[in-house]
Image 1 (cartoon, rainbow, N blue to C red):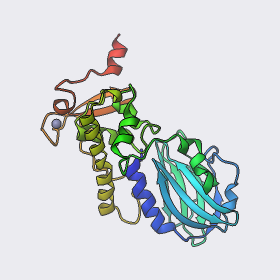
Image 2: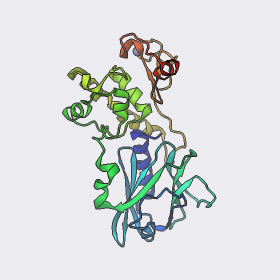
Image 3: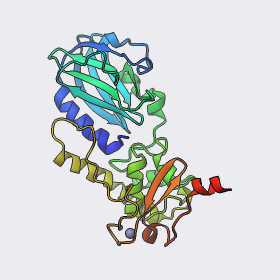
Image 4: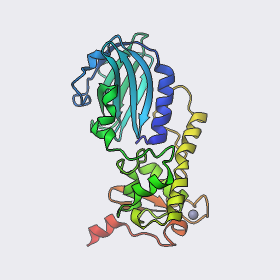
Length: 285
Ligand SMILES: [Zn+2]
């Protein structure tokens, strides 16, 4: 699933390619992909792409139209991609949920690679985007990192760090890949509670958010004009259980937390303890 760094590089590349293009038509072949009714998608016809941005993990495409400034807010969910194509899609492209056709022949598509059809888009007046329920409930952006005090306040909850950091209402932009990297960088257990962090630990977590910016820098170097289907994610520990920790050489371990596999260094994050698989131990009860 695309997280903050992947969405950031996507909107940067799309913005460079799309800005000032004119919209010829707009369609939503995905039955439930367009979650808004007013203004209708057809309002975009004849409009101009003003640019692209990101709110948390959600890309936003901005348009100037006859009825004013509009924003297309996109939620990629687990398997959506926002992609620009040089040629028009056949309507048989079953992966396409929303198609924005440009006057120069190119086409922006919201496509979905899973079978669940969960990705969606909403077209709204730019001025109302901050009031959208998905936007209004977001915590501070994870990158650039919020001020230390704001982060400390956001994390002061009696919940484990792994789900807490992935909760967009706590902090926006982190998912199951980057949470492992941030916790490893900060040398914190995924099972530590947010409300149990001392100030030194909050400091380390704050510093650990740096890995998101480093990932964006990496993408800037290696990704060209077109975003590849599979991102070259510079992950050091996520899903690398069984390999040596890049920092101390201890074998990385993994444990299921709810439905998510989390990878960690037992030497540096859990006081030498290898965590029991909670999913497995629940099954054995
Ligand atoms: Zn280690």
